[in-house]
Image (cartoon, rainbow, N blue to C red; front, side, top):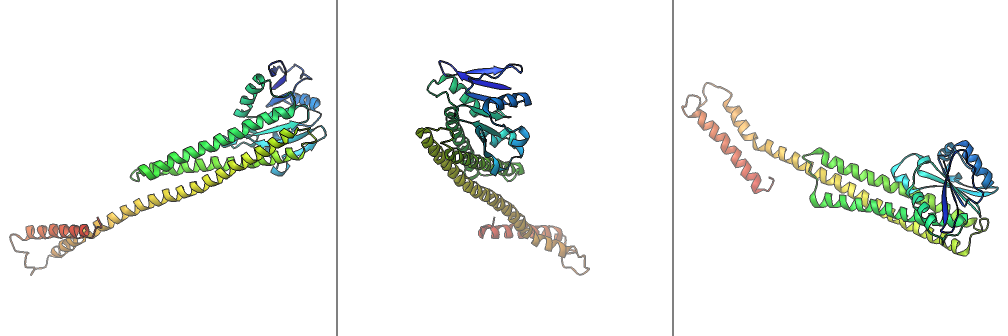
Amino acid sequence: MIIAYCPSVKGLERIELSPEASLPATSIWIDLVSPTHEEQLAAEKLMGAEIPTREEIASIETSERLYLEPGAVVMTAQMPIATRTIDPALSSVTFVLNSKRLVTVRYGEPKSIAILSRKVQADASIAHRGPAVLFAMLDIIVDRCADEMESASARYDELAVEVFGQGLNTRKTASYQVAIKRLGQIGLQVAKMHDVCTSLARMLLYLNTHARRLNLTEDQANECKTFSRDIHSIKEHGDALDNKLNFLLDATVGLVTLEQNQITKLFTVLGVIFLPPTLIASIYGMNFRNMPELEWQQGFLFSIGLMLFSVVATFLFFRWKRLL
């Protein structure tokens, strides 16, 4: 599907093209959503640059995601949607940019694209040039990255309160299994955001390097540097959160281990408590002919009482030593 954005009085007019419709020559932003071969060729003809296919986007190496075409600069970057998908093609967007137009190629539904679509249709202050649309998108993407990192941080805080405040119920194995699983999910989200930030930082550096080729204004060049600093700050936030996740994981496993050791200790003490009555029962179970209490009428009650006394005495001893 091709969605073209053409100049209008209020901003850019969104035009969803049918398969047989031709691409308007006045298009400023061309959004290719899971394009067919014919749609891709139409965009390539207007841009004067080759557009990578889905297979190329999925298999492209990190070091080759940024390159020059005769009529444009081609850049592939991961989007914040990467935190929810492992498919490189779904979580990446390819930007084909020259001084006049912007083409985006995507196979997923990044929220940043939907936000930008509404913005360019309502905001007449955005210049009708490809770089201006791209910088509006970068502003949205950086905000989305910050939101995703804040979301991971909030989930961490919630889990930390649960672990250190309420504690984990080790009588139910699922309680600490769920806690460790949630820790792993937050860790994966943070790790993917690292990849997103690294991808965007490389793209911004490459974009700034070719500022003259794209006729970027001085303000746009400064925005590149500002976005780079913002991405760096988000990445540092992720590094700090990653350290906190490792600490919480160690603490969670440590708390579970302490509780399990307490249970093991309880069984050990109980075994020691019942050792004296076991010894007494073993002695009186020998059935020797000359045992003094064998013919005694109260012998049975005496042995039972002796065993109960040994249990109580041993229990009180452990309580005195604060082992129970």
